[in-house]
Image (cartoon, rainbow over all chains, first blue to last red; front, side, top):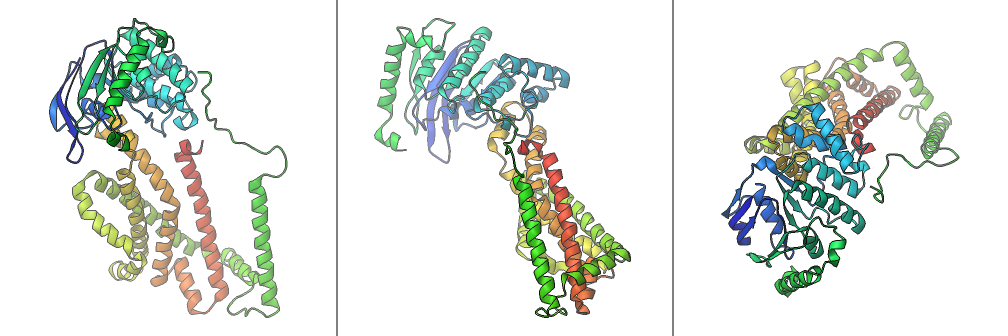
Length: 250
Length: 269
């Protein structure tokens, strides 16, 4: 589904990531973890063509329109209603207005926002806005879903609920997902594989770990799986080794 | 979705007693009445020279005369025509040029220095030049009102687009939208917010241009009447005209505010 080869990305001269290789097979859920400033987000931005790399290549088995990108911020249009925000991508794809509205309402209902279609984003809570952003992306039926710490700003309970809802959907539809996260427990809970990015600048992928915990998963109960603790310790040790005093200071 | 609170559109209101807005309005009206009463008294007892500071009752009589004799309307009509036309043309030019400069670096390179220069100078100094070029009729007033509004709106649009929320632009790009979608879904609504934020100032600028243009050289308009009142040392007429212009502009401000609330309804929820 996704093959990244020798990817080098830099801003204003020095590369942030240098020679990153990453493979993601169809139907797999991968997480990318690493210290702050290691360039995790840059990889997603190159895949979605928001940033041009200095070197390297990104090969995709899907069209650019089949990629869904869930940002850290919900990035909803404040002047459009919830329904208009959800239908935005559909309208860009020339879906008829009536059909788009029907699909939007269907998604809003699935995500627990029935009856919120005529409200504006400013009238919603952070969790509700995040659900609207999810509806906006999933309404396009993406084959590859990229997520950049999408739930980082939410409180623990809302975050757990939304993560579980999204995970259920991903497992049901067998979506291919690449998640960027700081949260090691989240990475293990949802992923089939975790890629560890080293400390930047010139960061590279330092390790790849398979998470062989059976699906479907419950994001809370999965933490009691016997493999969870050792995996968490391994990832913690690897990251702690990467985060130098200099890295923490920056 | 239990546990996720939402912000409702309702406002908290007090259970009893007068509303704060109403109390404030009553206080302001009372303050104005006291000021007028003091002014009237000081004029009547001779502490203020009525030649320079005529009492409010004299000013009121001049306003009533201007309205009752119908003398006001052609002048108000001339000023309003120049101001509204200048406002409309200035808005159109400012929005058009602002968009062009924001979306084309070449246009920005050509326009930005000119606009910065026009913004840096007090633009009313162009009034005599417009009179020489365009005569003492409507055209010179329209030109002055237009240039005042155009520069203001140009920067509102130009900066509005340049400083548009990058996250929204990237949102559109990752959803597959091109430049036309960006313009429709992000730039136009962003710019509408910026323009409406400056709309009241633009209304004031349009009237400034029209009145100053009439003041410099004209045969009709409130600016012409002001110039006449000044040249005849008629302080009552001068104050009356200033009050009429202020009232008219305040009414337009109220209309502009309503328009803003309608167009930017999402901001006032």
